[in-house]
Length: 122
Image (tube, rainbow, N blue to C red; front, side):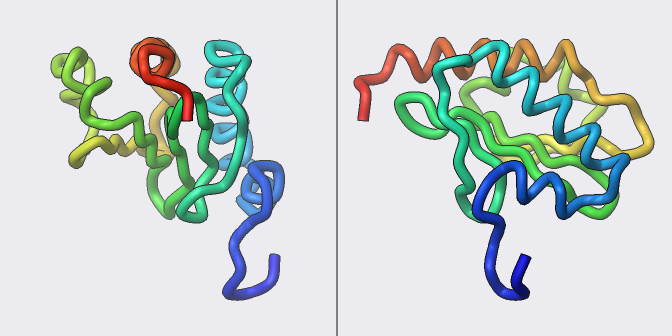
């Protein structure tokens, strides 16, 4: 990837990461693909993004965590499950030295799919 330019695809984004990080990113990608097979993949804000009647979820690799961005509406239903993770408005941080919370990610994606399918298509 050329310095200053972002990745052109989710494949490029993932391949630019170290191998252990690639596995984590691919896991998230597979989960979203399975739960939202009609969503399209794109890069938005230099991050892998799934789009379904608007942005569905973003995810990104950082030095010490994987950022997962399902939005505030999805997160509101899972306060107890989110407690172990650093979070901001609409964002979660999954530490690199801990297993990915696969079930939680699935639940958040399911909620986002429901929310986005209820929207008028753009």
